[in-house]
Image 1 (cartoon, rainbow, N blue to C red):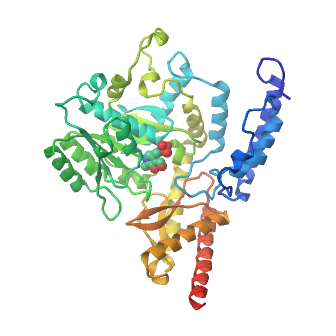
Image 2 (cartoon, rainbow, N blue to C red; image 1 turned 90 degrees about the vertical axis):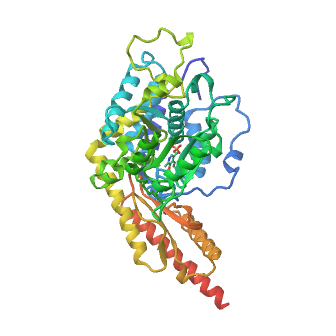
Length: 492
Ligand code: PLP
């Protein structure tokens, strides 16, 4: 039972509980593979197993841990399972988990330099290391956010601030002489760009969707034509978003050609490398990053493919003064806290209070080192290529997109299946449902050229060739089972 005094858990109790939690965590990570990747609960099950009101009496850590096992674990989707190949995997790697633990223990609030010199300065150092891994020039300054959506919001905000006179002071509304700002991104850019347009008051219709080529890459010629049409119609083009690793297929926009358009048109270039960024470590991926050094801003999410637990996205900006001027606030209650000349992170983003996110990234980077990270990313790229080759060699399947990074898009092909396109979509949706229900692997889906498509994304630090082979076996067995069902259905 917790102590009835008014203080915190006693040191002895903490030591004991932390030891228990360490054992629990080590056992979980060691055995997670034996669990189905995906939960099997129905909505409301977890909630209904917990009291609707906080009990009057506190509970011991043992009791709480018991609730975790009894109630919560059934509703956990195991993102830390090496068979997790849906969306974009996120790894709670060993050093990353330990970094999170330490972050909570130290509980730093790094709004000012003086509220945590260690957090401010470690962030400087670690983001500079990551900048170098991305081969971005030293003018780029970074800031930590909770996710890629937040980073993209700051990118679009900076672009608007750079293009609209007195944006900070006067905003956008009620300014009759001001043309409406608009932003360009491919049809495969992440939905957070649209959210950014909404949040900044540009409106959803200010997002221009540029068509893609047959490899799902933004078409620079269409971009140029769209910008010209918008200018003629009285809009104010402000920014172009190029994506290195789109969410559906992992496609890579031609950043250098888009940078040329931005230079000619004097537009802000934002590169969303939330997922694809870590591939910059692998020499053979260098062509995908050509032109990135000419960007105005870049985002990479270490919580996707850099083995850092949620949440951490890093936003880099070549002209950080634009954002700093936009976001600078100096309320009296924060005055006088810092000596002159120090970097003050409160003006680098919307959040004032901020966690010591750089600590876990530092631990991950230090633990794996450049070579270790490069080897893991390269291995994931190879696994995706291998999986794609298996798909290509089996005539029951078709590949729906080229493999640019570690995402493979595929589906059961039309030649051995019902001729009607919607029926084929349903068959593929059923394939996904059954594969995920087997529990060895968790895949997700998208729609490409209007058709339902299965999507396998490799990126978890513990995913090995054995897991990818097991995924392929599971998919093939399920297809065998589905086709047996169809043949029997037709014969009946
Ligand atoms: N950008 C891209 C390309 C993404 O794939 C995602 C998420 O999958 C995001 C941005 C948003 O990142 P977050 O989920 O961290 O907000």
